[in-house]
Length: 165
Image 1 (cartoon, rainbow, N blue to C red):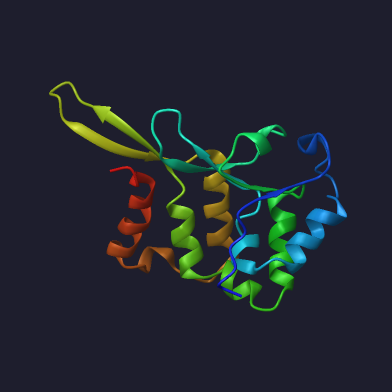
Image 2 (image 1 turned 90 degrees about the horizontal axis):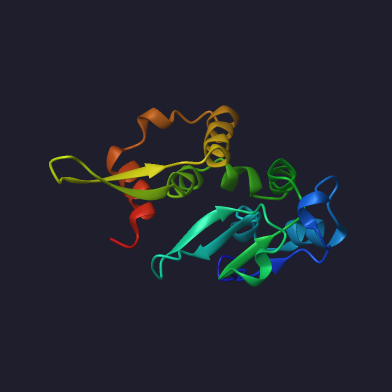
């Protein structure tokens, strides 16, 4: 149901980062039964920025993050395994290959402020290699021509990285 939002999931296995080979039954079952809209974000965490109260979406890498997150979606499955499960579920392919999914990926950059020599303030969005990999995989797996998306929608999606402004 679209009315259900998962506000936390933490793999019960200790040292999850080193056990990413077939995953555990808990994480597999969660991916197979939780709402698709939540499952497509498993493996990410929203963490409070130390500089402000804003939250950013990060890729799960550290097994100790369960105690340090606002919204934990920690599973011991690789991103490709999660996507395979999503694709096998009814409606999964449509959701995973949707324009909304692509725009969501664009909104996951990290905002940086750059001040030029003449004191102009510029905002830059940086994507980590993992996010770029997800964007690249999306473009390869779908027939969508992302260059034809309306520029105002793309701009608005990227602006999500600037939520504090």
